[in-house]
Length: 141
Image: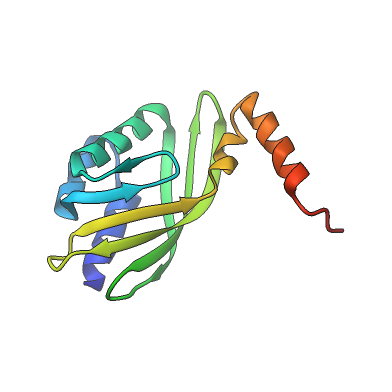
């Protein structure tokens, strides 16, 4: 199963807008995918989420740093970078919990990342987010 997970990670890291069908070979049709903005239980909807990402962002890059493999669930740590007309260039790090079925297809993928990092790059909203984060942080010198 470890090699199946590695294949999935490779697909994610090399995925392009015109190659979303590559997800078919590594994900189950009923995959559950969740991130701070999306939730689906269907591979076709997952492909729509990725399609929307590629329509709204440029220079998308997904880089995996660490893989923690387990028979029940695996975790990866990663950095996502991209740019858009609204935000300019941005990057954030996160981790994902990934579960495979007996056939080695991904049936569960949940991303954990701080959405406020992305929202802080959006004009107007970003100023509010940065101000709130500053007010809520501990001032340690």
